[in-house]
Image 1 (cartoon, rainbow, N blue to C red):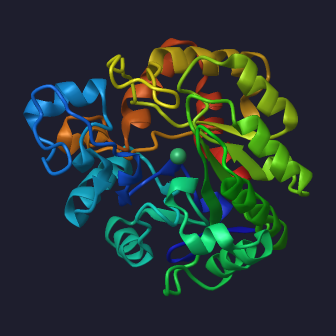
Image 2 (image 1 turned 90 degrees about the vertical axis):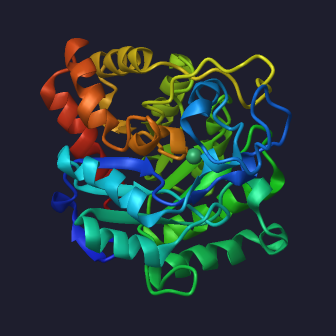
Image 3 (image 1 turned 60 degrees about the vertical axis):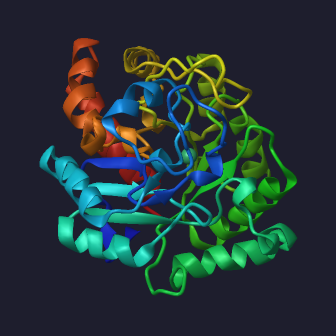
Length: 345
Ligand SMILES: [Zn+2]
C-alpha cells in the first residue's frame, strides 16, 4: 500500500518521522474579527512585529496578519528546521477555503526534500461557497474523489487524505453535508479523514458518529484538536469508538484575555498538561491511535516571529516526554508507526 504525496506515491515505510497536521501556506482570515484593541491601531492591516508579540500571546486571532502564511522563502526556512531535526513527512491539512496551494507545495517538497501530503475537501461552514452549500453529499464526494484521483484546483497534484474537514463551534447543516460527502469519498478511495473540530467543543463525538453511520470504518477517522483542554473523558470516548485522536496544539499555550474570550475561543492548554495526558493514555494501553503535530497556522508559532516552529515536538516536547517517563519506543510509535497506519490507504 502507499501514501500519495505531492510528488507521487511513497511506501509507508518511507514516511519516517511524520507531523500529522500542519499548514505550510494558509489564509485563516475567516477567523479574524475586527474589534478595537489596546495599543494596536488598525488590526486588519498592521503587520506582526515584535511590539505586538505579547498581546498576540494573549489573543492570537487579534491581528489579521497573524493568520496568514504566504512568503515562500520564510516557510521553506521554517520547514528546513523540521527536516534538520529528523522530520521526513509533513501532512498539510489545508483544505478549500483557507488558501490551499498545490503547485507551491509541490515546489516546496522539491526544494526541502520533505514528503508533503495534501488534503481534499472543505473547511468550516463559514468558508463554504454558495455552490458547496447547495451541493448534495454525492456531488461533494465526486469533487473530493477527483481531488484524490486526478488533482486539485486545476492542477495534477493529487490529495493523499480527506480533510481537514471543518466543524465549527455550532455545527451547521452544510458541515454535516460535507461530512456525509467525505464518507462517500472515503469508502470509494480508502483515504483517511482528518476532521477539524472547534477545539473548545466536543463536537468530535457527533462528527465521528456521522462518518461511522455512513459506513466509514472508525480507524479511517481522526478527530483533531482534542488537546485544547484536559478532557480525558472526551478522548477516551472517541478512542472507544475506534477513531484516532490528534494532539495537535503543541506549542499553543495561552491565557486568553477575558475580553477576547467567547464560546468557541478560550484559554489554550499547556504542553506539560498535554504530555501528562499522553502518558496516562499510553499507560492505560491507549497509545495506538494517537497522532501528534503542532498545527502551525499562526505567524507567532513560526521561529521567524519568535515561536517554536514546525520542529517544536522534535526539539522541545520529546525531552519533556522523556522526563515524564514516556519510553522511546512509545515516542517512535506516536511519530512513525501510528501515522503510517493511519495515512497508508
Ligand atoms: Zn484545524
